[in-house]
Structures are given as C-alpha cells and as structure tokens.
Image 1 (cartoon, each protein chain N blue to C red):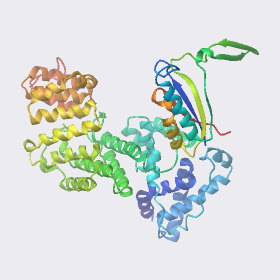
Image 2 (cartoon, rainbow over the protein chains, first blue to last red):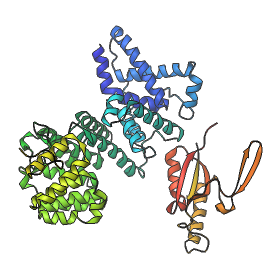
Image 3 (cartoon, rainbow over the protein chains, first blue to last red):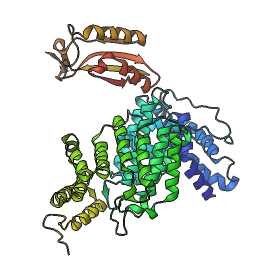
Image 4 (spheres, chains in turn green, blue):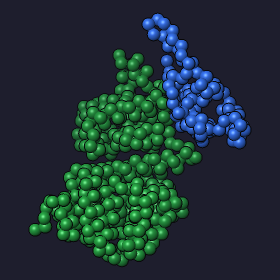
Length: 417
Length: 111
C-alpha cells in the first residue's frame, strides 16, 4: 500500500500540486494541504484500499484539509497571506473524476520574467520537479537555507505583485514560452556541464530537465520550439555515456566512440525534430537541434557535414547574435575550411573580448592553434582555459592535451614522464 | 489590484519641450491616457522644483531639492486597476517614455 502511495506521489505530485494552487491560489497553503492529504492517505489507503483515482482523491482531500487550515487558529494570518480574495472552488468533483491539468499554468507562473532567473529555476524544480530541496541546493552549489529563502521570496512576489496563475495570451506567448524553455535548458545544462565539482555529468538534473520538457510537450504538442528543445536535449543526452573515458576525462565529439551513443535516444530526438519541422515555423531551438542532428547522424566525425552546420549557424545568428554563437560558428568554419580560417574569426575583438574569461573560448582557441601547428601558443591558451574552469573533469581533459603537446599543466608542474 | 507605474527619465536622453520629438510624445501620451480610460496620474515638474520635508526631534526641516540626487528622476506616474501583473506590465510597455527611460511597476499595498 505504501508502494501505491509512492507511485501516486511520484506520478502525480506535480499535477495534484498544480491543481491545488489553481484552486487555493496560494503556493504555501497548497503545499501544506498536499502534505496533510499524503498523511491521510498513508493511514486510510491501507484500511480502505487505494482509491480508483489516487490523484483525484488527493486533490479532494487536500482541498478539505486546506479549508480546515483556513478555519483553524492560523486562519486570519493565512487569509492575509492568501492570493487576493481567497475563493475556494467547490465544484471539483468527488475525487473519482480525472483532475484538470493546471501544470501549464504552474510552469508559466514559476518561469515568469518578473522573477529572477535563479528564482525561476528554484521554483520550477521545487514545484514541478521530483528533487528534494537538498538535491536542488546541491546541484546549484548553494546552501539549503539560501535556496529556501529564494523560494520564499519568489512566492511572496507572486502573491504581492499579483503574478497571475495563467497561461499567457497568444500575443504574449512567444516571449513567455522562450522564458520557460530557457529555464528547462538551464537545468539540463547544469546537469550536462556542471560549472564545478568532480562529475562531468549530473544525471539527476539532466533527467529532471527531460521530464520537464516532456510535460511541456504533452501540454503544448504543436509548439515547434518545445519539440526542438526536447529533440536537442535527447540527442545531447544520447551521448552522455560516451562523453568521458574510463578515467573520467571528457572526450570531444571527434574522439567519442560512436557505438556508445544511445541509438534509441538518438532516434527519439530525430523523431521529435521531424515533428517540429513539420510545423514549418523555424526558431532558434529548431536550428540548434538541426545542428545536433547533423553531428549525431554522421557515421564518422570526418564525415560531418560542416558546410551545412556553418549555414545553420548563420541562420541562428539572426535570432541570437551572441558571441557564443559566433564562437561555435568559427569552429564550424575551421572544420569546413581550415583551422586558420576559424582562428581569424575568433581573433576578431568583437568575439574575443566578451569571451576572454570563458574557458571554452580559450580551450577552443587552443585546439585550433594545435591543429594549425602553433603548439606553443596552444599551450598558453590551454593553461588559461585550465585556470578558468573549476570542473575537475575539464581540468583533467586540459592536462591530457597539454601532455600531448609536451607542455606542463601548471608552470613548473607535472613534467611528462 | 492597483498598480503604480512610476516613470523614470534621464533628462539628457528624454525629449524636452522644443525638441522635434516633443509634439509626437505629447500626442502619444494623450492617446495612451485615453486608452487607459480610468486612471489617476500626472506628470511631475523636474527635481529643481522639489522641496523635501523632514521632522526630526519635533522640528520640521524644509530643504530645497529632491530626496535623492540621481541622474534619472521620476517624471510622472499612473495608478491603474489591473487583474494581474501581466496586464500592468503590458500597460507599462505602452507608456510613451518607456522608449527613453524606464517604467517601474509596483503593486499598491492592500491595507
């Protein structure tokens, strides 16, 4: 019976919570009431059996518990904290009907641009995710107290500034959807490219982001950008196991053993991209997913269609004219044409200056210098990149490159044996 | 809910009377205010006309000048009724001075 409760909790927690916030108009009251309902389930389900519709039962019970809480001593304080005039909807059925899906409203509320990006991420992971506060705090390298504080502040702003519990109108949707996708991708990348720590990939965050984008796709099945982001994340995730060697050192796309790519995930990613393309409304994520698809479709790295990738980056620059996109385009040009051609693009101050402190800029530059035979300059660039990253796995990768160049990792350090 | 839209401008980048854009700006404000329908609000004179009052130890102190000397100053405000923040933000984006300065949106506290 505990298993039934666990299963209902895991499968339906976000749906139940989203619905309760929709009914109660108060994040904290909804969370407390859901907790009460779970306690009630733990004692009644073993006696009376698992209800036909566990999620509906939880919503009905939690609503009743919320009303109890509002009537109790703390009610006056509660009512003051409640979202405007608290009106509890009464027509929510007897717990046997499927519950309305409010998760889209919850996602758009959590990812509202009036909240800081950090708050959006924290609130999204806490409200819609399956991770504990402790796990979220650990993933973003902040204390649990700081994370809890961030969430409290975000909920307070939602309530006091009147951030609506709503799906944006069509004219607002493109911008607001972009904000949601940015949060999901940020969570994925925090798992895929951890800024520090010893792991190269934090699987829990990647899985969480894949689950979140799955929810968005289920709820907005015709949106080409969510489909494209999902495609890109699946394709990236398919290479997860091949990204590091047995010693935990990262491998470049070129070095990876392609037979270790997860073909099922690749196929799922490509199918998602096909669905996105069928809508004929291109966007930045569709272009990025198309680039990932070209990489993953090449049977060998030297068979990669770099000319098409350059053209896709040209198109992406129209949407996102950022130095990072220019850097990626420079790499594609280096591969399609020559390392020297890529380097001359990278040494353009408009690109180089804003990225001077970015370790992937230095590491990429080092790689192109190495390919051009400018080995001493390559070593200097690798050492700068090494200073700029706190990720141990990345550092091991750079050390290996420096050893291959026959140059010490830190001045005066590790001579090659 | 009620929201206050506080319009902050840097006079060195915002049109002033006599500038070629001034007439258009005033027409835009008239159109915006009409579109809002019911609102409270007004433009304010510049900070050189400000006088600040404080009471300390029972004594009223009156000094020439604004509360705080800043490059940007509040040049006007609207108080409007909205269903939610999104509506208020949409209205803020339509304030003609948003193209030159910035519009801070704050909910009126419910007492």
